[in-house]
Length: 528
Image (cartoon, rainbow, N blue to C red; front, side, top):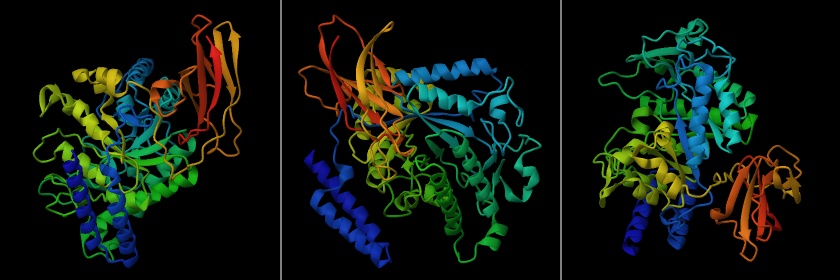
């Protein structure tokens, strides 16, 4: 075990040294030398096992996609019931964040002020749902009832998943066809154009301004996945905007960099508590392309999708990263374990969560124990690194359907106790004030523990949730132990379970702000 950790530490130092050799800026070099000295003293933080079987803070997300057509043409009330049923099932499985697709093809599963209703909702792009409803607003409200975060998932550039699809008359394409390019069987915004970036920022401004979202989320589609034998048709744009670049690949990456930076600035300028997250393809670069890359052999974010994810994290342009590590342990070209270790070492000081494929996890046996699937080992790997703060399940319906008893395992073991979302302290590290005036009151519904929200000067200071803990009367209060959490709620009250009237216990309540900073506790001894 010790030998393994030493080898991983040496591997981390190797990666760091390779990085140093690539720096020409002397100030950056000095900073990295300082970091190297720190690593020699304390070891690589990413390589230290957390040792926490049940973490109190963990991102536990699930993606709900629209692009597969699962909502298409379903009557409003029926679809609402389907979504409620999914959310209830996911809540029971311990999921605390929903990533919901609201913009698959420059369209909207919400009442957009700029783009047409999605065909993935009504069956025809531009057709308003009848009776009228707003799926994003509905999902935000339902997620809040269940104390789940809501992340609005958008695709930035894609306009048609197939050229056969018809665009609504009001689609922006008809006003500005010069902004778009055809590649393979699909239509895209041209990422090189300032007008494309301005439009996408306008869409995000509309969402963040009008909806109470917790995050804006993008997945792995930047420049499109390569079509064999076909180059992306941007020669004219390169001739017009490529000044200063001798390499088109560098120019393409720069175009995406500009969008990511602008989106981050846009979101921060409107609501500084709203996060901006990316879920990139699982391989950044292979070692054959870059010694800093992973020991893999597959498509690359940096070279093929022109997505320099590590730069975005390093520069603080994204607030979290969920690489899609959808392969199994032992995959010849893209081994899951290799990639988890690589990303853990390259978190770039931004929250890192792992994108898990439910089907690929349950379809493959653990190489060390063929009688079980790979979920136990994958969860152990995920929780072995302090730089990994949780995971997100692809896809939500696979959890709900309990494929391979995946949901059962989350309930009984891996999500046995509730978890708070990790703190994004680089966005806000100030906790709200303590709850006030906590008291037990008898009502017709039984005993209720009431409290008053703490005072707040700004939206960032405001308490939006509360955590209720229960301890035996003589038990030491340990708020780091999630097994004592009996509720995470938006209500300033909690219904107490009346037992014999002689059971002595202690209830502890804390407040959480929008970024899940936790206040100091207030406790009350009770007999129930």
